[in-house]
Length: 487
Ligand code: ADP
Ligand code: ZN
Ligand code: MG
Image 1 (tube, rainbow, N blue to C red):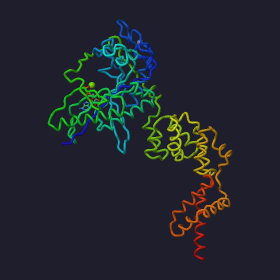
Image 2: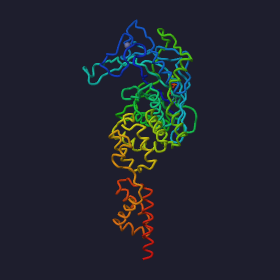
Image 3: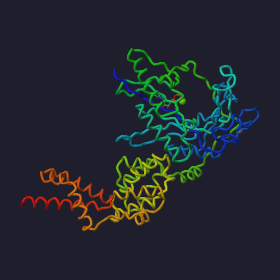
């Protein structure tokens, strides 16, 4: 029997606040161990949490971007469990009444529309960090760093709408891009700012019910998500094919062995004994506040992509590439406007500009050529002042010097040569230097026309007007043909 995977993700994202969720300590990553702590985030008795307004704002922003309904009132609860890095003995998290519910994310992927429904987005605090390696007493001692304790997180829970490992990784990476675009999360997966647990089950292909799920924790890269899922598909399908049943459990992904292994079964699952947090009132988010936050949301990448497709006549791939970040998208639109030629702007940015950024490992904002500069270069080509190949040289000079295209063309004498007399002489030289090319053209190998045009372009350092050269070479070759016919 064939089996089909079913996947739902639970994603934790650290909100980009300066301070923690319930105290004024710095929420910045790193710092000497236990340097960003106070009685509240250390869980000392009697310390009272006070909710960070900015964290709520960012969570609402994320909820809106995910198409959720923002709840006018939501509740914090205590999730009780014992762990050394959780000094209070409970984590404050929204449970029964989350901040945002019923969202939906939709996008085009490889020609298909993908829709992933969001169950909920809720606020919670992060725990501290247990450290073992490379510290005194290794093997015997656990060191605790509470800098991360109380850092604000949102948890995003999707419906089990994903159907492949690549699809799950694609969704996760789009979520990362979305959160970066709206500045709620920095997307830094190495530092743990964004991490995901994957729920996965298998069912007979073509059926609609849900199989027993396994939760895989501890995934901090797109590649590992894909590999962990592929491993689980195989493992579960194998159990099912042998007529067995999948055990509902939590497993951990182990990068070193490329496999998942059991952490705890359903029976061993924690009973978190949730109850409402007595030290925090219900979180009230009036409609007016939601509206104000909505008004500050930038255009989202997927919206922008659709607009690029319709406004500029770009291909799916170009629109996707150019809308990826606000910086690239802004650069493109400004260049298109300055040059009046969106097609050329797209070609330049996806070609020479993109290559230059890659080679130098810089962002588009650091490029020495601004949109007005690139627009000026495109205009010179469009007006026939320089040829397309000379433009490549001019661009190289522009990124080195920061000078305008016009100035470089003038100082280096790179203007296009349109003078038929000058070009005619260059064509004759090329033909005299390549009699075999002329002969094979005569013999019917008309492809040598392009070769001769290339020779003329080289002779003129790419400055010749290529269309004029082509016409001149063509008529010169035809004249030779008539000569031979007569002779
Ligand atoms: P739990 O009660 O174990 O927390 P939930 O119903 O709250 O389970 O779902 C948690 C996550 O697991 C969600 O992302 C959901 O989409 C996913 N999920 C639930 N059932 C399945 C299933 N049978 N297969 C795959 N994922 C599932
Ligand atoms: Zn604190
Ligand atoms: Mg649940």
